[in-house]
Amino acid sequence: MPIIEVNGRPVAYRFDGPGHGPLLVLANSLGLTMEMWEPQLPSFAAHFRVLRYEQRGHGGTVGPTGPYAMTELGADLLGLLDALEEPRASLVGLSIGGMVAMWVASHAPDRIDRLALCCTAPVLGSPEAWTERAATVRAGGTVQLIDLLLPRWLTPETMSSRAALVTELGAMLATADPEGYASCCEAIAGMDQRDQLSAIEASTLVLAGADDPVVPPSVALGLQTAVAGAALVVLPGASHLANLDQPEAFTDAVLTHLLGGSVERGGRRVRRQVLGDAHVDGAIERTTEFTAQFQDLITRYAWGEIWTRPGLDLPTRSCLTMAMLVALGRFDELPLHVRGALRNGVTAEEIGEVLLQCAVYCGVPAANSAFAVAQRVLSEHEDGA
Image (cartoon, rainbow, N blue to C red; front, side):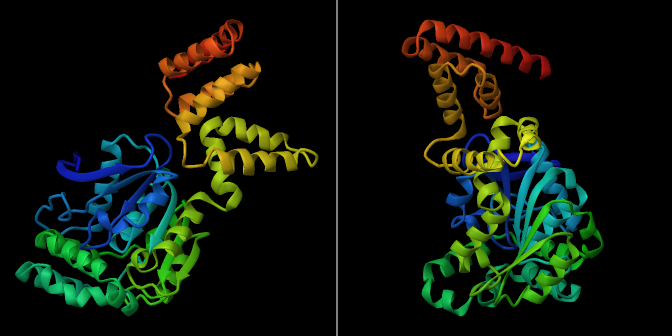
């Protein structure tokens, strides 16, 4: 697992999904490692570059002597984004991961696209209960918590029917560093983010498990009310680890929020990503009652159903599109898709290779015109860099 220095400390992290595209960060629950997101990973990675990381004292991240504060845990995540040179991301956090996510979203709103706060709260329980748990773990490790926490994390139905999951969660909890775990408990004990929630600007989903004894739906409703414009989803048959109790329903709810509804999910996001905001905004402004149905068609069909299919990544689709435009002689549209290819991470050298291929199969005159168009776009791109 890669390690990177963040604020003077090593942090373990991992990327999954395509090499380019929007970034999605997953923040773990207390006592668990990034493996907790395995049920969601295939679906999330089909749409995003997924970044998982380990909190202090968890996984491969060393935890300094505590106590910690939520400010420090939030600064860890922002520092990780800085170290990886990632200016902006969407965040999904569960339990303490959601607490970290809401801290980052309220203190650095310009860094967050969309936000999902799952089974979490801005203030949770009594400080005394958390400090007592911290003392217990420092004295005897995290193993002694397994029998206490598992019935809170999972519903009785899941506990009885998925023995492998129960064993896996117990093993994860047992590997947590006692000092790191205890210090994270103290961060929760000292946390009250209620006055900061009004600073959150990101489109927010609050997700709760209907059977969660740690953060019951009534608490989630209070969080949703405090975050302007937030949506609320309560999953039946889910306890505190809702993503494991009801993995399919959790994944669908979060993806629907992150990617929008059926049109925006597939189409508008990718269309903006490839063609750029200026082009899409201009197309929207020029839309009339007469052309609206056509705009809806290409958004849903071309961008929502074809460009988002998992069989090809966006750079490959850009290369194919450029080749087809050359073959059809559509040099009016070619500049737009050369720029889109650059946005998708296609290099100038790779664009040149595509056009050389076109010289063989589309004809030298067509490739000659295409090279001229591409050269102009590349020169503009270099001047604007």
